[in-house]
Every structure is written in structure tokens, then in C-alpha cells.
Length: 288
Length: 288
Image (cartoon, rainbow over the protein chains, first blue to last red):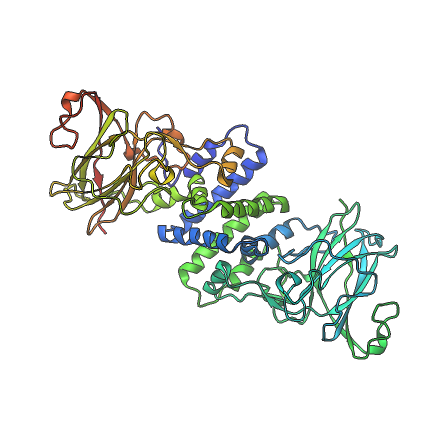
């Protein structure tokens, strides 16, 4: 009989796997269990600490709903979500960044120059740019799915005051690859911190803040889809995004311009009377 | 601004921890996140695989109830529960083994020599032994909490046909430290495999079986409590317990003896007409 010991249990685990196990499954389970066991051995994890870990998972389970994804949030604040993004980014393309839990599929079409701000107050932000391929050529017919917080720091899916697709829009580029829309600058906001993940943040003396950002999902035939975010370069949380989403090439200057410089051909053209903010952000997609 | 990269994200995570963070919390979170990130980097974990992992956790959450502890089961079949046990066992004491999810607190007292078999069929098993301290002296007043499966392979908590405390008993040793009770031999059984943990077992070509075992929790003032199990040495699953609970010193020979050798002073003394099984298992407790 083979006795299981604290030193051989990882090998015993691997010995339990059938020879027919899918090789990638074997690789992933092997690495997962090796690291799980090494974690317990290195920390000399106690029964009480193990129970705390189980209680954390059960606590996440207790708050998990269709609209509240505590396990995703845990992955986000531990940096796993961002790490997976970065592992699969390519130097040919704009950096990807976290999807987050607030995207709502099926946003209504937003025409070139359309306005997402509607009746909301605050200075107008004009965002524009070009969707390009890896060689820098504009991509016509690219689809840009845009979403962001309202000025109250809430996404439509969190906020009963907003319509389903408030601050969501789906824009398709013309032959020149250009996109442009108006909105208000998104605000910094906190990830949900009233659940078990919030307890972890507090126990580590961490804050729950994310810097202001616009979310984009960019798709074009023959290209890898990109999930990304754009950050203003003056945000106080840029160096300490609680979900690790900030990359150098996603940080942009939001320039304040006089009303007279607001361009023609936009939904709000001729209606701007105050200075507005202007950000240019080109997106580069890698080929499939 | 500091850009987060796939190579520095673990350090960035540690930099987020406040200086006031409890040192043990820092040690555990640091080791956990280092291993989590190394796992993702080593396997080059894809977005689809990450989603599979999140779906696994959400699937566990969906089946988790007061009586169904899928996260504990996941820890069990990955060997983490047994590893934590082994990290905190001492050479002075009998090995510990997994508690499992089926223990019911508050079992009724079972007198020395009492019978847990009651109306259930099958050959009688007489289990007896001495609870000793680290120097081998008998411990009087030690408390032995015993539980096991019924012959149908189910624990009372799983089985509507059984009373709450069916095959559960709480025995207190006299001055000689001795315990003895009769029962039927527990049977091999499967851990619950109709949930996400079962999916993992199948994907790895693993079976869900545990070898036959008696569960004990042994407590005595001034000593470390012990959670353990006793296994028969002829069980077919001894080398492949799906929760990694088998240790050399917990494997015992169950000897078949003629009815005439059944001892006096037991509840079933004088009532045994068939050969019975006999197992001797002494328990050694470490001092606090």
C-alpha cells in the first residue's frame, strides 16, 4: 500500500489521472494542484486558515447572482483577470484590458458623431480615433462597442435610474476606419466592496477604486477582437487600479478645447457653448 | 505612471498591500497570488480556460447548500484537505485524516460495548482499543465521537431511511482508556459526483470512490483533538482514495473470529451466533 504523505501527495494526485486524460487538462490540473499544494506547504496553512478560505468561497457563492459576479471580481482584484489578458495580448495590437462585469450586449447602433451623453450634465467629452490593422491601414466596417459609467459612477446595469443601454453604444466605422462620439467623462468608481471580496480588500488595507475609463470592444472580420479601456493621464488612481487594468498605451491626455473648436458633422455640432474635452485614441487590431 | 505587465503584476499586487496589513495575512495572500499568477503564466492560461474556471466556481456555488459542501469536496479531491491535515499532524500522535462532510454533532452517548448496528444486517464488527497519551499511558475520560456509513453506503445525513444519529455514537473512556463497540463493517462509497467536482473527476478519468472507513474524533483535556479514520487492509480502494485520506498507521487488519470468541460485557454478548470481525485500533493523542 502506498501511504500518502505531505511530500508525495502532489505526485499521488498526478498518478490518479487516467492515461486518457486530455493533455491540456493534464497540464492545467497538474500545474494548478502543484501550486495549490506548494501554497499550503510554504505557508504551513492551518485548519483555521483553510476554513477561512472555504468560508470565503461559500461567501462568494452566497452573493453570486446573475448581476453580481463575485468570483470574477475576486479574479479581478487578485490580478488574475488582467494577467490572462496580458498573456494573450500581441505587440501588433493595442493592449487589451479587463472586460469587467458591467457590459450589456445588444447596445443600439450609435451613428458616427452620435451623442451618448443625452440629458446628463457635465462638460462634453469628444472621443475619436481610427480603427487600424497591424500595418496601420484603416479598417472599414469595424464594430466598436462602447460603454461607461454615468456621472453618478454607476453603469446602467447597476442603476435603476438609467435605461438598459444608457451610456452604451455600438458604432460601425466607414471606409476611413474613423469613429467619433460625444459623452461625458466617465468617473472613478469603486468595485462592489460589500461582499467577501471587499472583506479581502479591507484586510489587505486596499481601496476598491478604479480610475476613470471608457470601455471598448472592437471587432472586425479577419482580426482578433479586442476588449480594452482608455484612461485619462491625470487620474489619481492610475497607479493603483484595484483590478490592474492600466497599460501604458491605454493612457491618453484629455485636452480641454474652446467651444469654437468643436467639429462639424457631429450630433452636437452647433450646440456646444462651453469648453469641451477631446481625446484621440486609435485602436490597432491584430490579424486572426 | 507604472504600467502593469505580465512580469511585474505579482510585485504590483504586493505593492497594493498596506504596511499595516497583518503579517500572516500578507504572507498568505503573497504566497496565494504568487502561485495563482505562476499557474496562469506557466500554463499560458487562455480566456476560455479562465471562463471554464469561473464557471466551475459558479457551478459549485449553484449546488452549495447547508448539506452539500461542494467547495470542501473540491478541496478534498484536489488533496488540499488531506495536505492541511498532514502539515499539522505530529509524530507523537496517531495520524489525522479528513473530517468529510457527513459528521453530525451531538450524537447520543454510546456506553462501553454498545451496539451501533441495531437492526441492520451483515456480520458484526467489534472495534476496540485504548486511547493513550504521547507516552502510551491510557487516558480516562477521553471522548470518542464515532460515525460511519450504513450498509447501503449512505451516512444518516444523506439518507431519509435513517434516524439523524444512525451509525453515530459518543463514547467516553473509563480509567483504563478503553473503548469498544459493535457495528457492521462500513462499505466503500462514492463522494457526490453529480456536480462540478464530479465533472472534474470525469475529465481526469478519476473514480469517485473512497475505501471503507470508520470515522473518529477523539478529544481529551490537555490533548490535541484528533480527527481520523480507520481503514481495513484489504480494501480495493486503499491505494486510490479519491480524497487522499489513507495513512499507513490507519490501516488495520479486520480479523474474522468464531462466535465463541466474542467477549463478555458487551451489549451483544451472548447474542452472537455467526463469526464476527474484530479490529483493534489504539489512538495516541499529542499534548496541547
